[in-house]
Length: 459
Image (cartoon, rainbow, N blue to C red; front, top):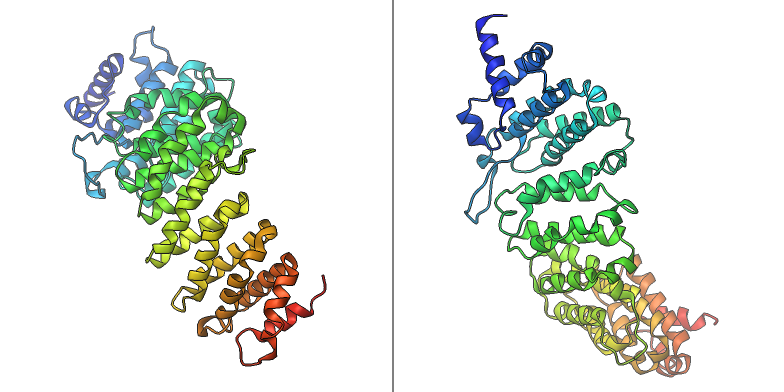
């Protein structure tokens, strides 16, 4: 062994025997480089032999892996409340590609590692993988592909069929998932989580790989970060917080959500976002709210105004005065979801008003008109006993729609119009026939052929 090699080994024996550097500045202070680490991995047996006998090979490999992972993690800690760009992380993705290569060499040692050190090793490499699993400011196409290749090798090495089984493997106590969340805890505190821009994305990646029934065991561990994300001012973090709640609601039994009061806490955290005008937030928000058990709970009192009524009422008022076409379409889609899941008797007048406004407006988007007719169809099906009072308004709206130029050759609108009027006829036959009997005699009026087909249908 030459003098330079001996110096490298002795330097890293000293570093690994003490407290490991945690941040980029500490790496520079102690002159830790990936080039040196690459040499150590290629001469691993010589490096291990240089340590005192009280340090096992498993411990040494675990410490080397932690040192490697540090090069690919995001260490950007800033008190500035600002947006980041790829320029803030010039070397992270490049380093990560090398990190995954070196960690692949260490995978062959995993089988022989002592259990505790093996668990620590897996936590470290999974945190690095979570950092480069998707396109972020600190990742690149190369780092993402390297990450995917490494994860495939890792699962093969540990003999797990997917990441969920690895994260929740009961052979590790506590599990890898619980250990990863514990290691991340200092970066996910109320005053620290926004200082490292990767922390929330790592948390979300870990969370999404743990599903029912395993997630039930970690309910106390996955709160409160999502609450902090949705209350942050930046749109990406709000969206991420809503997506966290979405995953939790999909994988935790409703009774458990209600029992611990988490359902109420989530509702009160998400409700202020209903006033947001950010399209990405609106896109994910209402579908998440609809998953709350309280949205599907019907009280015995007819006059009771529940949480689902508050949301639907807000949607109906908002869509009526929304001018942005994309936002209006989104609001209508959410209204459709709500009326399909919960009875809309208490909102019938405003629903009919929204239907009239959108169908009778010749400048409305065609897609919006299609969704509006889908809403109307559902409303007639669920509120059919009250259709007699609204029969005239519905008839006028649907028939007026037939003469608008942009929908005359639209098969979907034609079919939905026929479905709506057919349901209306069967809901209030006498009222329907009294309003249409003279109408069909004039062939110049809009929708006459449509009405004739519907009248000809048998019950």
